Image: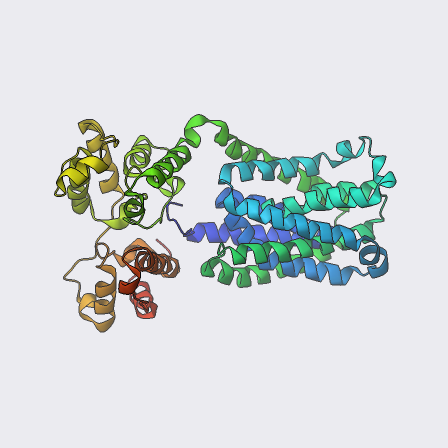
Length: 462
């Protein structure tokens, strides 16, 4: 997962499809539980934010079908609609948290939600007498809490289930209001993520086939409901959730290891120094912010940590695929030369580099090996495809910023997301660099470039 925009492998997509199918069966058999299964399992394959976005439409449709099928409108929605409103408020807060928070704490939060679900009977034995005495307050507390979990980790089930169980709500009514709350939370979550630009086109499109898979699983689960005892199915589900919770807890606990988030601190420190520097605006616009520390190849390796430590002193992190291996050797030599106060800008260079730490020779060699190993694989300049009209469009656009990438680095399915990221980088450069009177509004037409890359892409079977 080294790309800034997540490019999932064929095996990962197959795993996600299977997860969505299994979650649909769970929802059909129990009447709820789709996000409780789908989100944590996909989060193990990808990350929490991607897991939630890939769940948006499937989760919405599954909850809508379950709610319509459930009936009991007066007893459920007619009585408990205020709880659903509080869920929506909490979902907004949770979705904002999802946007700004690092991934590891979110994984930990998701694991805690799973453990709370598994321990619901124990939690229910606590003293909850205040619920009956303060119905409005209890509706707000449990609604906002459930909404926060819904917006941040897609799992509002633990607090809401405990709340309705303590009120002694009948099972079919509880299922109906739970689905209504899930639905409201999902609408708010999708709107919040969409408004923040956190939903990519490729992820949105992937929601359509995954929704069909979820609905198929839902239909099969409804049939299983008549053949498999709910207690048996629930026991299996609890065992699966326990394993998932333990895995996510282990992943999230890495946040408490100092080396796990040292890179994020270094990035924050670097940006704080930029803000204090008279040259900060120039430093920030040297490179677009295309990759974060965790998006680097082998992000916890010593070489990746050196990349963050030294490169972030002067500009955003470089993506190793910006240049070929040969090109990186020259670039790194030039960068180190400047970091040592040399270069063609004389006194200005010395002033800018006064507080910059330059790597010693052994670390310079480590950086060269790292960037060369993960460098751009260039397309052969003599390739006949480059003499076609599509090939010339591709070469003209892409050679402006880096070596021409070998189309075989990605599959036909993966290339559109990569090209979309490059288009955003070019738009960023045009917005940031230069005085307003010199800025233009370029329209890079990528359709022909994508078709060219897909025609010569790596086979899906390799």
